[in-house]
Image 1: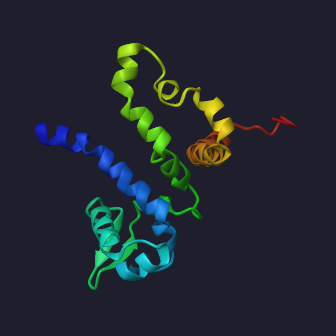
Image 2: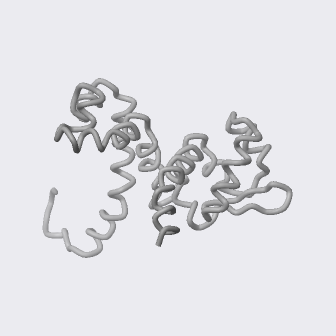
Length: 168
């Protein structure tokens, strides 16, 4: 039981590792073939040693596969991290690793103690007011919502006949 709890406690590290890879563009760089860690470092502008450690961590999670010669490729689990695939979760990953999201969840205990909204406590505004002042973050949020709703939209369209409606 304690091993399962430890795995749950380390979830934040997994989230940040996946976010870092997406932020560096690694899944898209691996879209058509395996590449060496050094090649990926050069293409992404990352430190070769630090990137190699990140790539190995992602391989241990099953997101990447490591072959001989420090060569990496995406696994089926990692494919949805690409921006150009149907069912991409790239947008959601980009949002969940953002500093303002991360810090808000890190402030959860204080918000529960006070009963106040964590985001408002940290940023002095509600999340939608704040995004209105930070259009780049609003764009990332919109991409995340599209990532999450794409699969649901397809399922809804497959399950219900909207043919009788001219406009929805």
